[in-house]
Length: 142
Image (cartoon, rainbow, N blue to C red; front, side, top):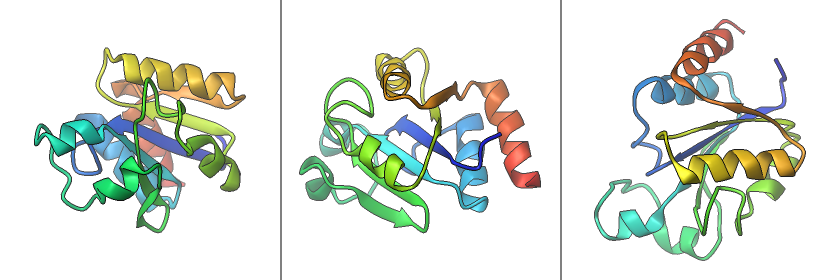
């Protein structure tokens, strides 16, 4: 497994991840590996999701909000997490070569994020329930 690995959680924000993906986020955090939350700020603005710690103005302006030592959020602009966002630049600045993408499935945004990562040359893993449990255990043991 690559040490240069990041998790991209395509969801409603840091507190909105559920089930095995929540455990995977926690495992990445505790291992000090990057976690990027790609959030739909339109849902947050309409009150359809909740993430009070997010600065919607910063995210909607294309900024990246730091949430912790290796955790950040950015707004989903269109399609997937790599489309019209600074995600690729952020990951490259961190030396990331492997991207684990998770989120609610089936989801066109998760699919577009997987494709976007692949087209940019990253090794790509989909965080299925099984992978989330296995990779989470690996990161906690590392």
